[in-house]
Image (cartoon, rainbow, N blue to C red; front, side):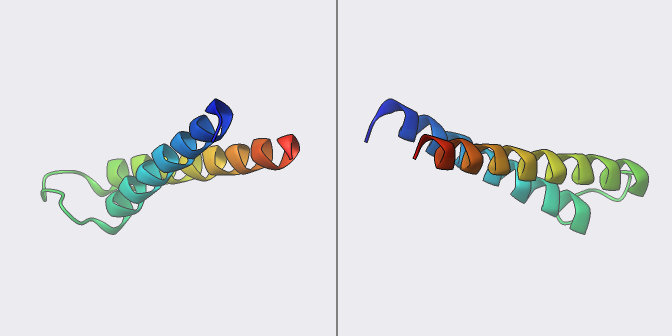
Length: 66
C-alpha cells in the first residue's frame, strides 16, 4: 500500500465521518431543544453535501490513477 492509497483511504474515512455527523444533525439526534431547526437543517445539509463531494472527488482521483 503506497502513500497515495493511504491518503485516499484517509480522505474517504474523514468524509464518511462528516457525512455521518451531517445525517445526525438532519435527523435531530443528540441535539438540545434550544437549537433552532433552521440552523440544524442548514448545517446538516452543508455537511452532507460537502461529504458527498469529498467522497466523489476521492473516488474520481482513485479511478483516474488506475
